[in-house]
Length: 614
Image (cartoon, rainbow, N blue to C red):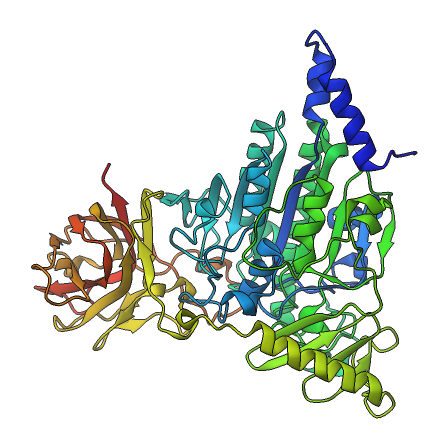
């Protein structure tokens, strides 16, 4: 099929639309197809080898694979070693370490304010924007997705979630109850948004939550894998260290993702908009376990190929030829400029130069879509995490320990060729050192204990999970992984729970807790107060309530855990209004105390919610 170069086709369309027309149905259809829609699907902890497209004999992913058949397969695409850095780089087109991202939880996942996001680029270009799933780039406004260019958000903002079956989630800041298995639910929301806005250009970001642990799998998805024989990875180290039950659960979750991708693609077809909708599919890091990964070295958390190489498939029937393959190295940082080029969207003012480069011309064959192309043998992609670093060029990967691997012939990084290529080693060593120095954050706030913003004037709700809190005395966190945890063992009235906050705009707030307790704990009094860091201020505002209802005992949805977990479990959390609180602007501590403690277990706390009074 012959295709006009996209800018030419777009200009011709604008000329037609500007002529004197009578407003027929055909004219309206032309207006609808001016600019492509965009859907970006991001898997969580799915490795490069977790697709049948890449030779994995243990599962079938026909719908995801079809994106390569009907579009483009980026053969050398790279992300970060773990999830929050990848999300920051995708959202901004800039390296995560220059933006203050240093961990995956408790504020370290947030990138600097002032960074321009892909949501803002598309919103400013007149697109309807939405994000459904795992945000993992900040919990509260102005770090919240609604503050960063996304009109509609449904999902969770932490780094993982403890329950995948009708859990508590949030919709634009308000706590709501999910509907069914989480990946299915998120996809349903994306499909409904697409249906609602099919007459407008839309940008939908669908960051799914699987196959990240906990390894909760619906019975129907688990049944084919429960007793399945698993073919190990050809790399002996991966095969030796594989937990096959974990692998079965991960692969079952990958097939569930595939079915959801199929449902979304079918919805685009049924709405008649598939031809002019860009669909992107990639993952945020390497696999969360030793399993089939094409013999690559390393896994999630590693700066070797196995931790960084990701599938990336892009379908746009109107402009990308089926079966297109791109060999040039590319990364998550390149998706923002590439997608903006597809849609002729203005990148606008960014906090600093983009690290990403558009590869739009390599997919469409139209050199007018980006200048200059990054298809260069000298292009280098850098990776760092927890003190480890490496750099990937078209031919090599160099590690800070001085090892060098020729990836084209040795993708498994088994044969160090540093001695054979001393000039390459010297060049890449210098590049890596200079990059690490250049991208090291000089913002002093990145080296302080994080505070959490409250009461942003553009946000009705502020959610403060105990993930972002500290506790004193004998109070215990439910897991060493804080993202989806609760506090328990609150049996001493001297113990407290504290959130260090920065009240952006003063005002009155309705406060609610999400809690659990047994019948014996009913009657415990809870008091919330705000202690300004300026201790010479007025008497701290305070509000109190008494727990008057018990909650169902035990953890929820544990019957769907296919592998023992290290993450925290979830409970049947109950909403408890605690009263109104007038907060002055400025920094301080929100402190929760308990008195008249009843029973032997005390109250368990999951979340504090503040709603600005209008």
